[in-house]
Length: 254
Image 1: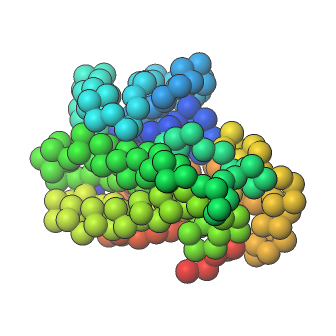
Image 2 (image 1 turned 180 degrees about the horizontal axis):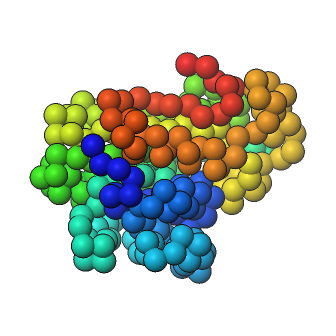
């Protein structure tokens, strides 16, 4: 087992929204945090500043294996030990826009491919960058970020939801192979979160619908999902792998 205070955590797409909340949650618990970003250096720096001396920012496109490897090298050089924990949260070029979304008769294959590349290829690059050191340490914690939409597509975001469903298959295959090395791989699936940059175009009507049919009668917030991610990285989650934990206030009961 490894306490959160002993972990070096890479969070992809951590400059905003859920990723930023996950970074702050790990920072609050004393972990060393790599705030990964692709475009918004200023926001990433703000997240790292809010955490303090235990955080750094590193620009890397998760779709680029070389950039990801460089990020892991920087983390090891900065903190004096390798990455122990990966949270794959990055979302590439997508907005939850129920009005402007691509519909079935018009969506292009490259839209699917864009999301599949960000989700699955991004996850592969992150795991492969850290795998050698994790195997050597006989310890690793990997959490992918999914969605409850592939169980209950309140709005049919075809490309995004399909890619996240594929990411769950990826997660479970990795869990099966890597468990023998002391590495757990799990998914945390929030619902539509209130409110992030990605969900900023979501209409009040959609949020109201979700709120009305959710047992808690409220829309889940990013900080609530972030705390669930901490569980999988913590000693309390040591025997759990290959699971998809839905954190949406009970909207989806699986």
